[in-house]
Amino acid sequence: MNVEEYIIARVNALLQAADAQIVKRLEGGMSNYTYIVSSNGKKYTYRVPGKGGEHFVDRRQELLTIEQVERLGFADTHSYLEERTGEKLAEYVEGTILTGADIEAHNEMVALRLHQIHQSSMQFAPYDPFGRLNSYEGYCRELGYQHPQAYLDLRRKLDDASQQIEQVPLVPCHCDFQPSNIVIDGPKVNVLDWEFAGMNDPLYDVACYGNVGFDAALSFLKAYVGHEPTRQEKQRLYFHRAFQCMQWYNVAIFKDRIGLSRDLNMDFADVANFFYTMAKDLLDGFDAL
Image 1 (tube, rainbow, N blue to C red):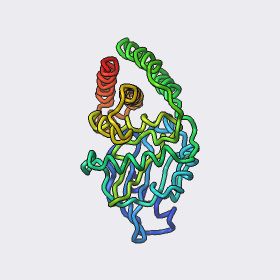
Image 2: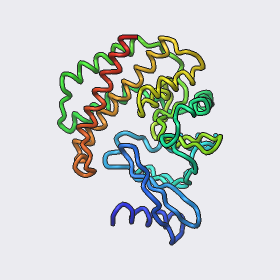
Image 3: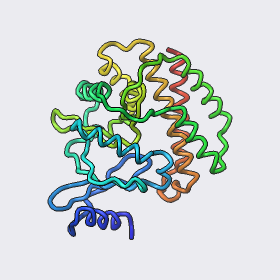
Image 4: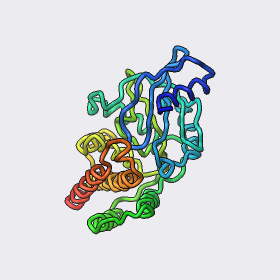
């Protein structure tokens, strides 16, 4: 049974239906297989985490998070989440994924939604960036990977930069607030995929916009803070985006080491090099501020 056949069988069982059909697979992300499925005249999404995904997401925490987020009314409503496997069935959210729209034109409305998240009373587990990064590096070492000296030098530079940025109160953050996780439906901004949510610096979410290019993050920063960003605000943005690139470097190395480059026909070693280069450029930019 292939992935699509498996998803059809699971959706039929969960909805007590017999007419589930695959509409299409959603693109994006390094960890999950997510499909749009129709059944009983409605559309749903079904997520199957990829190989090794259990190392990076605490599914119990994800369930506690989405139970809070759903009360705010701008996330997908889940029908089922299996804590052991991370498989998730949710109602499909209609609209346009922000990556398919004029991103900058939506900065103000998306920034307003992000402020609502950050100012909410939700309480998540701490994101603990450096604890997380240490774990990711450890997963790679357990698979026999030795981080090259260039990476170790860059990691020290990241550690040094962390001592220079302004420390701010932690707030509830999405922690993967990239445009591919944002759906625009007229005046409404929906925010999906809360797997990585945690208490964090609010500008961590702004830095996630750099996934479509760091210029997008810089533009979004101005909309979020509501003024020309200060040097300290820019420092935090550069630092958090560099951190994210170091984090995803290790995820990519891990995926290469467990055979996903071969299985998915995607060179995750190249992906890792891409993130390393981006992190280096961002830390150079941090020093130049």
